[in-house]
Length: 267
Image 1 (cartoon, rainbow, N blue to C red):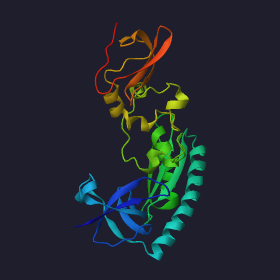
Image 2: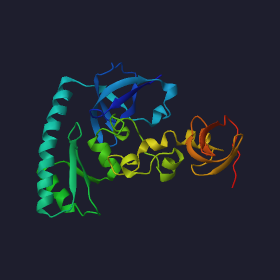
Image 3: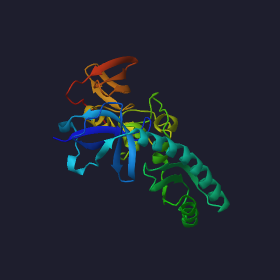
Image 4: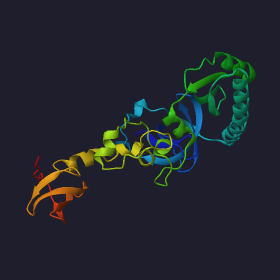
């Protein structure tokens, strides 16, 4: 059975699954892999269990070999040269008066492609820039305009929770995030609380939304009038996951626990 390795292509970056075929590779070692962008070098994070990976092995890109000393030297040279390419690309873009912010540059290991990621408020005609870069570096140039979420993923950072951003560490796909998810979880709608570094809604709002929706069934809303065993009162707080709420009943705060049943609401 082919081995499946979890490999990251950059420091603290997202982990991708690769078909290791019959290669014996150690954790924290480096390997050369084929990707959609070309040949790259990555770090082995772990040997994955085949039955826990939801991607068919035949659909995965392959690990070509364990990284050699020559691969390491080429990788380090590419990193240094990419920084110089980034400076030059920014200089040319400024000369061409292109309203764009070029975030990073990266060579594939075999230097057959040089990729630039950039952000801009509108579509950019970068053909002249690409032509000048191709003439300078004699390789295929790819300029990719990315959005706010991809910008955060590219440059990484620390989230409100104190951990590295989910999008730059383990999320392979960013699901749609809506304001209703914050409402379902009883989170303050203050943008400073529910927006990430990208300025968009936090990706982690999707993680527990399904559970909050399930547990929230039958619970009253804050401010709603309810009938309880203690009498009629107004809801002042709701604990969704524990399925209980507090109500003001004739000036006394009472806690009502619902368990799995639905509460009785009054209109």
